[in-house]
Image 1 (tube, one colour):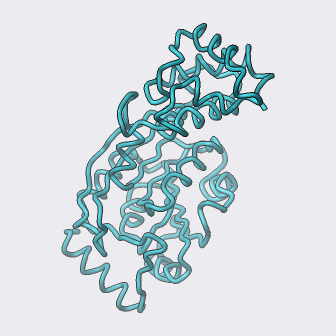
Image 2 (cartoon, one colour):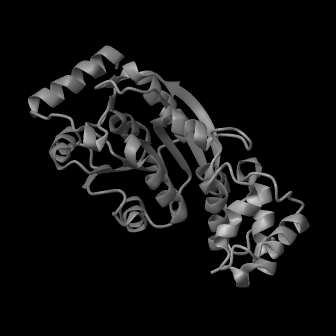
Length: 294
């Protein structure tokens, strides 16, 4: 399938079904076969693989997934597109189209019932920009039995997810993603290969889901509260940023002592800390200061 053919097919399907795309749903359909191939390759699929796709649109990626995986479950929010997809895959029993909101659907049950209990499927998706972070964090925080997460997202977000400490793009979601996965940049995707054309470029990244985190964290809830507080006001020093966790912000002495004991200068900013440093600090605060945290 050439890019021109996919573009023509996309426009034909939309016209035939009288579908007007909704900006509110972030509907931009990929028309470049080479990008689809890169996504399939990054997902490391084989004929025993199961795949969960989020937001299949009119099925360009779904068709490629169906060729490579033993089972494909695609969750589509837009009710208008469900019959289009069902018609497209009417003769492919290994492809299931589910109408639902991926932010609300019981994904664990969907994986168990549709892809098989005990399997480790991959998520492969062209995610709408407006739900990228919520979807990724839901996939990770629920600790679903996944292998890879291969997603096409806004390039700026991809840069944040793969950023290094001390850079402008580095943020709380960067640290969270590294805790749960091994992030890897796959390729940049220019805006002109979508219908309709978005205003920004995209990128494909792969998140290889870890069987266990690379750092030992004694209290995950506290760990993530510290990360969010550290990045909440980036211009503040770490001691000032984390004082927001204390019931009495003026009693910072134990906080500073814990930082120093962790080998972390309280005057540093949160954006300079690595995942390992956040874990070390969280464990120290859990031991020394946690009772003071409301």
